[in-house]
Length: 195
Image (cartoon, rainbow, N blue to C red; front, top):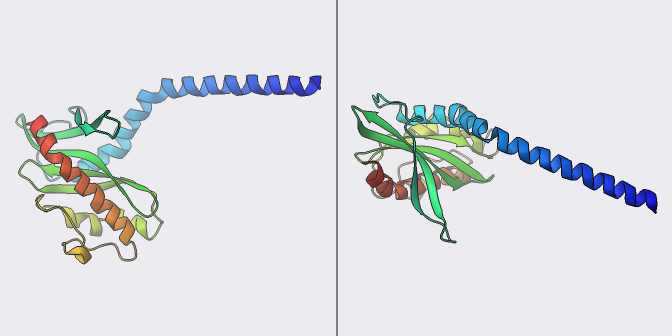
């Protein structure tokens, strides 16, 4: 019986120490992980959606955290907005939005020009089926969105819109459409804050 109690105490001590070390490591590396996410995931996506604009600033350095609403519990919802400026004037903005596909959440960087058009999209992260739903990242799909007007939202051609879905991946395509429409709903608030 003593051996069992001793083993439980030692195991509990090891678990507690491991939990403390992991918690400390999480806190110590948080800033570095956020910088890595900005540099290697969001950075290329921002460049992809704002690449058509001749901006003279660094959108990542000039990013703004804006409150765009509240959740169901009344807590503020913040989003990072990356402005593309020319001569100090904001020409376009990029920010992330989320939709639900076949395999889970799809994170999309959406670029919107201040004159009310989609500058472009870039799928940042997803859990879609490789070789099928994962084709939402291909330029043949993403380039269809460039230059579309914001009014009326974006829809697949099967739903009366102009966007052709990825063949065999309608759930994944609808997830991207959902993310874009979510971003477009936030645009009036973001435009007002940024202007």
